[in-house]
Amino acid sequence: MIDRNSKTNLLEEKFYNYSLQDVSEPQLFRDIFEYESVPKVIFNSRHVPMAMADEIWITDTTFRDGQQSTSPFTVEQIVEVFKLMSRLGGKKGIIRQSEFFLYSEKDRKAVRACQELGLEFPEVTSWIRANKKDFQLVKEMGLKETGVLVSCSDYHIFKKMNLTRSQALDKYLGIVKDALEAGIRPRCHFEDITRADFYGFVVPFASELMKLSKESGIPIKVRACDTMGFGVNYSGAALPRSVPGIIYGLRHYAEVPSEMLEWHGHNDFYKAVTNASTAWLYGCSAANCSLLGIGERTGNCPLEAMAIEYASLRGTSDGMDFTAITDIANYFEKEIGYVIPSRTPFVGRSFNSTRAGIHADGMLKDEEIYNIFDTSKLLNRPMHVSINNTSGLAGIAYWINQYYELPKEHRIEKTHEIVGKIKALIDKEYENGRCSVMGDDELDAMIMMCDKEFHKKLLIFAE
Image 1 (cartoon, rainbow, N blue to C red):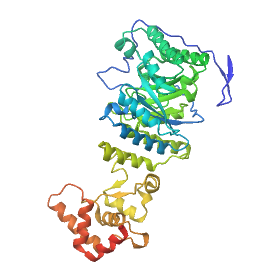
Image 2 (cartoon, helix red, strand yellow; image 1 turned 90 degrees about the horizontal axis):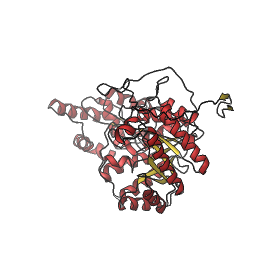
Image 3 (spheres, rainbow, N blue to C red; image 1 turned 30 degrees about the vertical axis):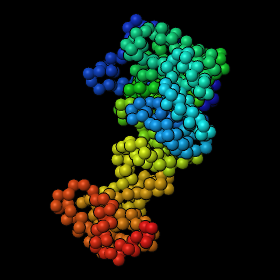
């Protein structure tokens, strides 16, 4: 069969038809995953084309996968975070959906409370156990879509479920048919796809799902789950670890439309963000994330990172409100009690802060020298200097200008008399054995001690 590729306008042969390979022994890829050593990245130098979808977006799992790793949120906290997430995603719904558990009455109360907000985005969806009773619960809650677990590696099929591949396939297709019968859009979570036999199980299974979708007229989504973070974005890397290979294969061989494809990746090997971005680049429309990257083990792909990545790849924020990122971080720390590691990009306290005097000196001249973008405008996060024994005169001058919000015409230089006096006091602190950074209140008190009149003038601008 010959068909024209609508993306490339090239004629392509379509003679592939992958059937389930019902092996007697599990395929565990022991040449890659020896377990006693670090997993290997194998290359076969097969390259697939980039083909970003017409539309890309973010889906959220903060209240499902994310919440599994933290102290349980209250209903009120869930509602507040949901509102902040909606604000971040903007009117175009770049954050398209958010998934919830439905197990407990508290879970269901949170779902109802978020539904009652009347927000168009994100759409509330669920994640359930795969049985008819739970499908009925989804329908009673007024939800149109739910996620169901369909583990696809032999690690899970043989070792966890004690099934053969054909038995697993029959079970999964039965589950999906139950969802369709209930009038619910199923979102199939292909757990552990980066250790699965791609052509022996993943593609045949996805192909069967696409057949069911055409027969029923109901969209069936495929979420490619990099459950253990084994995915790699390297060009020419071999399956099962190749993110480009997985996305291309699902689109090209199983004919899963981009808008029905999601990527869900964990950060076990520090690759969550790059892998999610790669999935976008190769034709996956949805990147599944959690706020601040919370989630089991090393966590999920951070949602705020992919919001920034979206703007980077598309050249526009498409109406997203990035200042919500800062408000989300503040809410998690102050109201939920979650401690954000200080060096976390975009949300950590040290994200756009420096202690180095040479950096502060450059920032005095032009903050763009040492700031990744205008964090004041985009994130409502002005650059910050933390003062210690390495900050120098420039660091102290920058701190004074920023802390007291001095207008441009009143900003002081590192040669100002007060700066030298403060530096002498700071140097004495560290000569006496101090190790921690100077607090804002301490520095404010030092200025008042050195020059009360000058301190009064500074406070006028800070009011």
